[in-house]
Every structure is written in structure tokens, then in C-alpha cells.
Length: 79
Image (tube, rainbow, N blue to C red):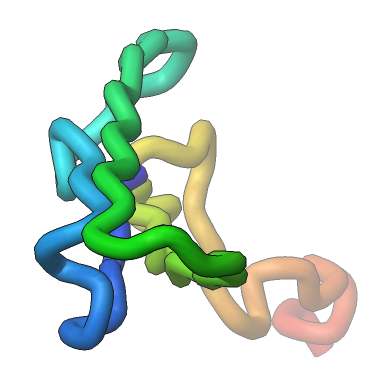
């Protein structure tokens, strides 16, 4: 899986996430360090999107394969 934190440009000076993006292998653990530095005294409500993408290619890793029509009865071919 590949992930990326997308801090809104408006909050780039206040919010820092490290690593901001990385690739995780199955069963791998990644620590993420979050730092918030308020520039003024006010109430903050910040949403930081996390974009995640599956990098697993099922066609290369599945056991067996998909072959349309391979399930036809042998009897139909001999008639």
C-alpha cells in the first residue's frame, strides 16, 4: 500500500506529518510523527486527508489464473 498525507496549503506552517508519504508492505508497521505548532491563539479545526492506494497486483500474485471459457464441459467439444 502506498499512502500520502495531504496537509492543506493553508496549514503547511502549522501541521507536519513525517513521513508524509511511504510505501507499506504486508504486515509492515510505520510510525507517523505529527507536529502541530499554533501560530496564534485561536481554535483550530484541521482535516488532513490521507490518500491510500493499493499497489498489490492480483494478476501476478494470485494462485491459478482466469481463463474465460475454460470451464466448458469436455462433452461439448467431442460432439
